[in-house]
Length: 249
Image (tube, rainbow, N blue to C red; front, top):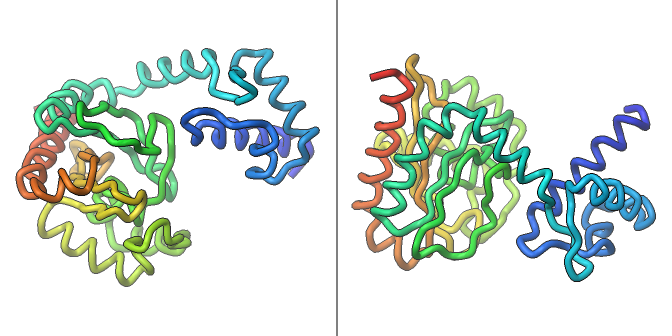
């Protein structure tokens, strides 16, 4: 990789890392996290702040207004998010929980819309963020309805990092879960990615019946587990409604 390409990669790594910190991050902490020299990090941060891609509050670097504008433009250009948003709002109003819409991007799930619930718990998710397939409800919902060969290829890229004690440990365990998901029509993330956060998800199909996205309800384990069967019906209804809109029916 040439020096120019390395610099671009580092800049985007900085932006994505800052985006994972809800209240921003200090330069030294950022340097440690991305494993770059502090001088290099400061130089890149200065460049991004000058162009309004980042802002600084109390010595903490946060995403800036330029990225907000780009995010809004990306949302407007994403027809799936626009088609689905009203249904996501209805689902959140019905359950009082946070609702996500995510797509498959390479070997990750990419969040393209989010509606905060009235009973929201703190979650690391945000529009534009990527998460692993194997330990998220949306990821497993998508995997379950992909052809077996694609699942095997994606499985070869998975590291199966144990985010919590409940995280899926290997591809065999994951495939066993996918078989259950295909039978029930819903995927469960039982505090596998974030401690205390329970998730119920269902897949969205396009007009060719290929899985293109997934809808999820996420919230505190104590609330969602009690109403798991009821909320599973709601999320399947929402996913089916979006699928019908995509198919033009």
